[in-house]
Image (cartoon, rainbow, N blue to C red; front, side):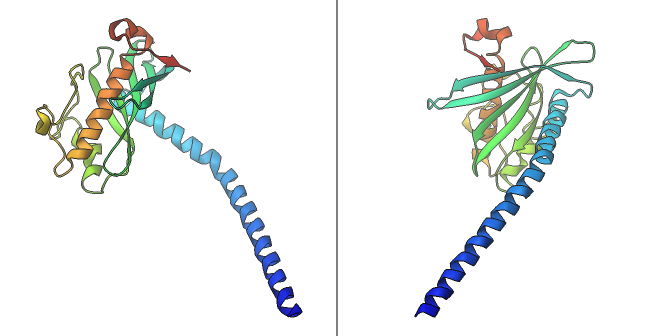
Length: 207
């Protein structure tokens, strides 16, 4: 019996030791990869801003954070990257906006010119079905079936199935609605930045 108890004790000690060692290794690996992952995200965002604004020589002159409540009263956060060209001319802004898609969060980056017209967009994050909802990264681009480039979301963009002017992704109406909602919300957040507060009456909260 004592031998059995001794074996169990040794087993517990060994397992505890292994767990501690593995925990240390994982923490170390996480520390090593933390920096490169952060750098990769920063580069992806910088490339995304250039892409949606349609300009390669561009600088972010100011970053704003806007918080607004959606139709259900849930507070949503938007990040607005005000941009300028090499001559310090205002180009408009790229706006991060997130909504719930069919498979999970759908995060988009939308570029607006100073008048509020859409210059471009890119998907930063999504969990939509490959081959269906995932088509949102191309479907709404210039020249495609659901083209929204150049549109002004002053009148909210909606899918044709709901009486709107945008063709939904085939068999992915839920994703299409979520995408357009993210774009509409991004526009409202952009218009809620200091330069346009007087027009919208919306409140902006800044970094």
